[in-house]
Length: 289
Image (cartoon, rainbow, N blue to C red):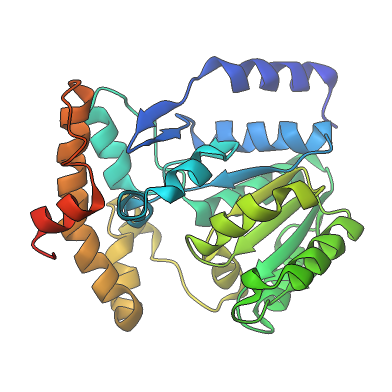
């Protein structure tokens, strides 16, 4: 059972660390355990608002610079966690150190493990993946964490985000299921855009925008071995197992991200780089224009 003292300590912790302004967004400098504690605190408070969590990685940062309109959406998030060792490494270079990588694919399992350890119930609603995938993920979650229940699953059709009636009905289903956490595995930036547009319709205390996590929990995709994760080579495993989808993305990220980091470094010195920071200029500097 979570006591009032536990809640008070979590609230103190949640206000103690201020976000770091990096790559035009505010990133919360939290460890995995601190992120889980903050999310648990929100769930336990059961306020009639939906707080959404995003986990930007290198590809997300590149998208933020190529499509600046996404920056507002990421800054509307209640919690922004760095998913990617390059972000953590570069944050130290800027003197704004982030403590560790908090991967979206690890966040939900860590949250489930936390509630299971406490013996507290946790209600999830899974949205994303091909038909049948969230149901398999739900089955695996129940086997692994008996105190965690999946109260609903949905595999939305292609283009559903543009269907106002469908989205309203989906939000009503999630609310009727009384989910504590909405888990969105729609890919970025679709999941962040959808949450930003529909959060006012949701009553779930927390929504997690965590990409392929549903696929991982379903066994549809496999994570890299722990030893590869420990030496920051998970990206190589993902590329090797899904080259058609990831090769072009990783190549673009390898070109854009160093340029973006240079822009960030100049910005930290209060140099006016309004023109250099434009998406068109980034493309010229990368040789892609």
